[in-house]
Image (cartoon, rainbow, N blue to C red; front, side):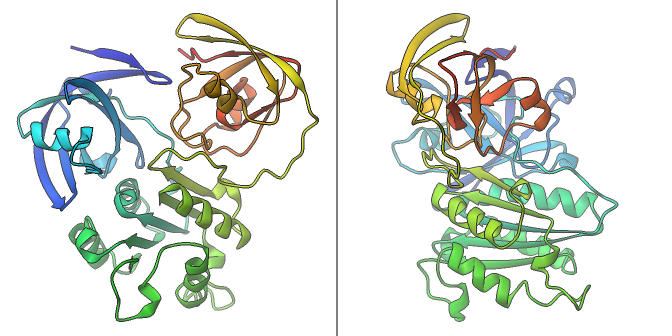
Length: 374
């Protein structure tokens, strides 16, 4: 049986059996699903992606997204999940579903991905906080398996050692791949022997990391390890991402090489808006969503399209409001907008007329949008 649901985009769900369940820390657990032969094509995925899980919690149907910790070569789906509240939906998922039970699992999605380059020498640095380690773990396992020339550095922040998830798995990877993988743990609420590893991962900590860890490069005596960084991966809460992404950019990493995944709703821009736009007032907006036509007017173009439509209580799909998740992706069928920074759309998709409503400023008196992509 296959079910579909609209969550910004049409998601295809399939019933999968839970084959393994494990409590990792006091408030985190993992679920594992085997993929039956007839669904192998449906559940092909890239490292860094997530799946949506549909289940009943507190008497209501809930859909939550969870990042995969498994790598594509493992041919299974493993999820790392955090319970934020004893009364929340995820707590119900932990209590009520066990090995042998079926859950409706959406086909893999998300663009927190990297192009594989197995023949190149690459340096990839990742920053994760708490449950944000999940897609990073998927990436690192995949890269170690498929890119023999790539070296990896992980900086992983947690409140305390008790809350550090996947330590055994991470330490095992570091032991096997010690010449290519280095992992550094940081704690914000637990004193460490070395003061360097105490505190949050932020701009100040990045400066220390660059100067004290990513400085001497054994492969090139004339440059530092930081100089050789090709890609940066960041996963955690919004403020952490904003701080680290801007710090990486100011330390010379191009924005296109800084990739981030947000684990909560975040309303701020990751990068500051550096452009000014001519004021346009009384903007006519026509848009289509779920086959229904809508019309409205925006008072002006001082705020982005999505934010203004939400203020007017239109049920426009969104998750992050920061150009990361792609939930508000739509076609611009008429009019002109300025698409600010985004971590989602490709150049090809932009050329096809796609925009992200959460990162678009109106530049014409009328625009026409279509949120029905399929």
